[in-house]
Length: 332
Image 1 (spheres, rainbow, N blue to C red):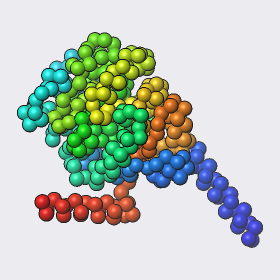
Image 2 (image 1 turned 120 degrees about the vertical axis):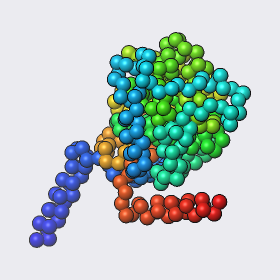
Image 3 (image 1 turned 135 degrees about the horizontal axis):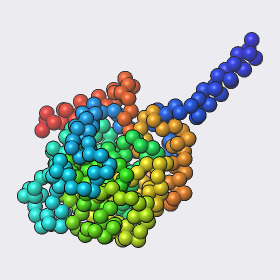
């Protein structure tokens, strides 16, 4: 009976491991990448109901409902475009026109004391401290597959880093999905793809979006050859100029396992942040992404585990943080 029990336990354990590896069961343990792949976990972000409402607001916006073939064309329904950055130089933040700001569909702007934002502040601190060791000030958030939340992390980190006094440039480098512009109530035409094709000057493509210290460049109109555009020397020259002009450049990129765009620019970024969503990536997908980032010459500084379901074990610690924040606000 002891031998039979041992054999049965071994069989059940082996079968469970096989299911986790091969049956498309997503990773739900944030510590997997730290224990198995030696990639530090910079932050664990709980699922936010406030962000869910903002996602619904974004999905109902005219720009988000426009079809792919409409990108790059003049749209009478498009939301207003912010003024170019170079036209605003020399103005005080208090006198500059606010296009977005507190009305932006970014969690850190609309709900700054949400527990998810508090978790992202920990990531902000890690990235800020890591700038001393990084070869440059370009940070590239990416994920293994779509829907991991890399654009959500990029937009919120840009706002949080600007709040501490840094001059931040957020670039939507995902010219296939074009998602970040809708966070700031912007239209996509007139951005990265036009600059790389020589149809627009760099200064005309950088916009002020109402958050002091934060500038934004959209992905531009939908190009037929995003990978070829990113391989042009003009892209590296542009990133070098922006790196000198701003304290930090956040370059949002497509999912690593889906297209080759991210691998092309990985070596140009001084820091790469791997964004994972609880329950949607398998162990093999995460392992393949880490290997490909390293093979492409990227410097992987850590990971962010996003949209973790609320459980009693993690809600307790976040409850302490919320209570502490509320006490601080009432005292002031």
